[in-house]
Image (tube, rainbow, N blue to C red; front, side, top):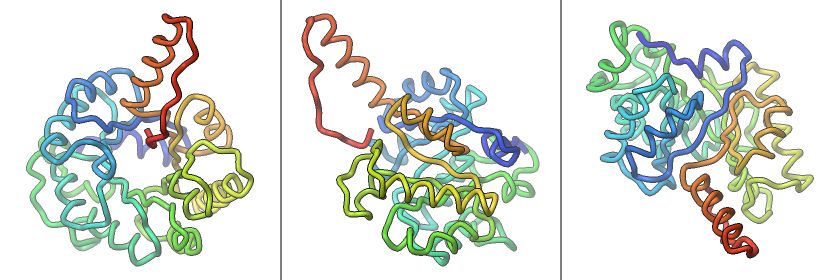
Length: 263
């Protein structure tokens, strides 16, 4: 079976940089994959796309060595299994609150006897290649997001869930959980301390840790802190950043500020 290159790097202690796909555009997915990211995450939770778009975007990413990951809308076994059957090599599950929820997500990513994933990898076996059925359990990354009050309280039991392929921090929702405004890139002391606590637990238990950022400065900070996988930005974010900067420069005016969208 095709190896999950991003997961292999995390297991080997190598850091990776990825990006988020939030727009329903196959060519954008192909362009981003050809940029050289280690992995790309197609966002079915907040992105402006659906499963029909996913069916076109995953093959577009597959023209490269970039590892395709999908963030599902929720911890629903049927949804998790469906994106895996479409060819995702990893699943990011949002709003995980406790070990039972983390274990349910892992089970949805594993064929029996290790889990309850139903067999039918209609595209996944084509993309994954021979041996998919026998080797998928070891190559699919199930990644739990810790970003709620309950998730923070149950941090250690989530991180130590057997079979978990990684933990991903959603900093904006984490800020909400801490009673702060939903800013992802923030130097608030409580937020920074909570992010460090999550990272420390992951390091202690040898679980790959990832985090979302809104750009280069915080990506560098998170990599320096020791995160295994960091999101540099998103398709929409990269586009708007370039457009607003260059339009302002062309006009000789101040850059127009916009409401934060999370991307």
